[in-house]
Image 1: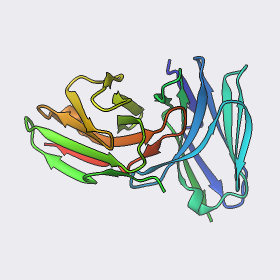
Image 2: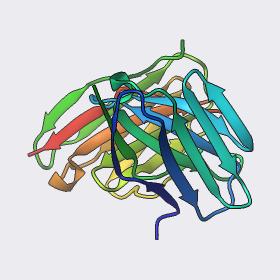
Image 3: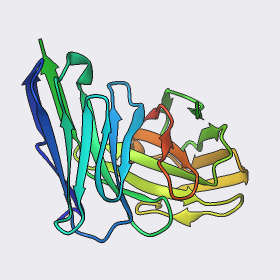
Length: 109
Length: 111
């Protein structure tokens, strides 16, 4: 069993829909990261959180430490949100990350 | 803006060649990382470095070595490339305790 599990693996949505991507992990963590990877490979950090909730534009990330679960929400989705979304957990004080396998999101018109 | 630059976007090498992948960051970060990314497996850590001349093995170090002679540069070396090292390689850097910044990736094909 992977230490970091994401669901769903693939997601297709219509423009304007509310999207939720889930991440569960099995180890104690110091922080959880949400990353975005567009075709072509480059990865961008969206959020780093260790408790509660963070919001940036149409993106919201939440984490429940007791349940070892995090969600990434996208409100009013748009085709430019199409990408792979990756959850990663940070253990200990170093910045080493353990990654989920990603959720491929496609938003259509 | 933080910039992490990998020397090549695409690379084709022959089996048995020695391959160097270079990564440079411009923000004086202590930590630097090399990952490989394969379909269905996600990103996996090959090596990381938390200071000049310091290195630690990640989860899949076999067949790889690294060099960090200067703080801004972290090199990944494939001593004798093999076809199972065909992959996307991603470099990242970070200050202590905060988010990581990734390069654009190098897609390596070993033939």
